[in-house]
Length: 475
Figure (cartoon, rainbow, N blue to C red):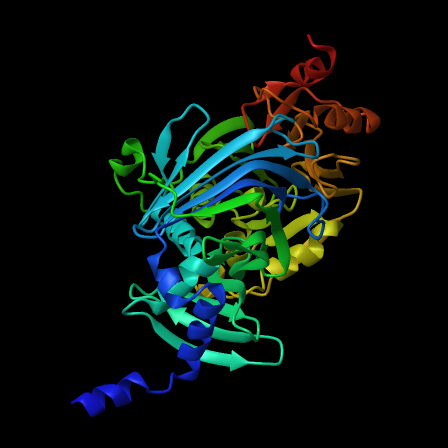
């Protein structure tokens, strides 16, 4: 038995195990790594980028300055809490003031803490993503890879790096990538994005520092596919400080949330044959023509758009819905566009968005198969440069580019000349405390000499045109 035990103890590690062993050694040694109880990273600063919400689909110029950032981790109980303040460096629709964000994970329970200290539980799918992010750190990742029940596979080696997939006992999967000496350089995991489908989330590490017997990265970069979402650096790190990171009682006692609330579509008559499809924070609109219907906007989610399409069939079961106008490319206003495309609708958008929508409707959605993935269609995209008229004997619908808009270079508004109505979103939201883009909308309406009585916003409530003018006069 002694000989057998000795033989087992000297057994050569598999290639997969060797990658993990080398990573543990590079971080300070297996024993020190497993003995650590907490991690604290303080005085963080850097910048975040505005994925899916920038001026153009391919733009990367809008950033938030990050300050007062901390990341605290309880390694024993799989808890983490991140706090930061971010300040926009562009004309942000919520205003220029700094915004504090507090996000946490306690096992499988995710939560946020509002500015007034109120804690709330987040939906389970978001919590799963946040739990995956917990392992996007060299210490948490390598400890997890060493844990009983974890499986290692798909080792790859090159002159510059080594890769190994780690599957945890509960099925969560991530990829650890090290340099040839074993030091982790990044961690990757797959995720499902409602707009982009299957994406690869990466966290890159640099500027390692010796902290209480462990090597910890001071610089962190995060990416979604090849898009950099944040570049951050911590000023101070520590190990084994006393931390209390349990979820706040209000979040811990809250019922589990399986997903967002069921869509609520409320129909509001605007004019004969024109409807606002409201009911939540983001709206759509429906316009009737002689032989077809025209939908404006597919925001928020696939579920919301499917509910809107069902409501359209209720309103006008005798007419086909053939086109959808999307005002701009931002993710919160296009998350349902694939559902519209699956329904056979032609996408009408600004010419600067063509490549974006063609790519979005052709991307792979295998992690979470959406309607278009289950029912593939050849998608048609029609574009607008400065203006486009869609008209017949019943009605004229004018689509205009909102030139110089500080929110999006490729923004459209919809004008109904007979009804003297403008439909728009984000350019002006009646009732909002901040409307930084309203002046530009008013300028575009004035330059085109449009006769307007009402603004039908796809955020907020219908308002008289005079209210838009008052935002510039203070009246």
